[in-house]
Length: 112
Length: 112
Image 1 (cartoon, rainbow over the protein chains, first blue to last red):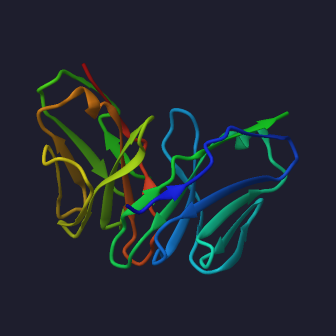
Image 2 (tube, rainbow over the protein chains, first blue to last red; image 1 turned 90 degrees about the vertical axis):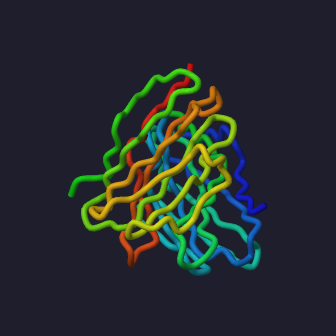
């Protein structure tokens, strides 16, 4: 069974700090990785996608991928209270399919 | 550009009934995927459609079915509803050349 693991949290960080969210996946052939943000009562919103090893930056967000360690992370710099949400890691396992396997999510709370 | 739309947004049904949910993808997107989200299981893949063809199906009973129309709009149907089918049903669409999926607001189904 292919799995995507995340710490459920809650992860609490003070406003202005760096929040670090981690995700591991079990299937070595996984190709594409995504981070979604989900506010309570809302649907998931795509934040970042990453396909190759290394870092990818977009504004205050940085995604990091290490396929050898089967690990993907999301860093949020200068965290704001509006970043408080559940962050979902998603993995696409194979070419030719759009099926995503999601982790259960990490709940982030940014304290003013 | 309009996002993914789903109707209805909320639905209350009783056990044994059937329900049909509708999803209209982002204009130009030909791939539609459906997911079920519950507090216990998180987001789970139901099925995926591309150009009116079901390409992939998740581990759900045959009571769950779907289809896609020539205009890329999709419907999913759940027959003989059970209490455990209460969930948020999410539809996501993708552009064929991109792997990123964008979610609609979801349909909240409550089975009594």
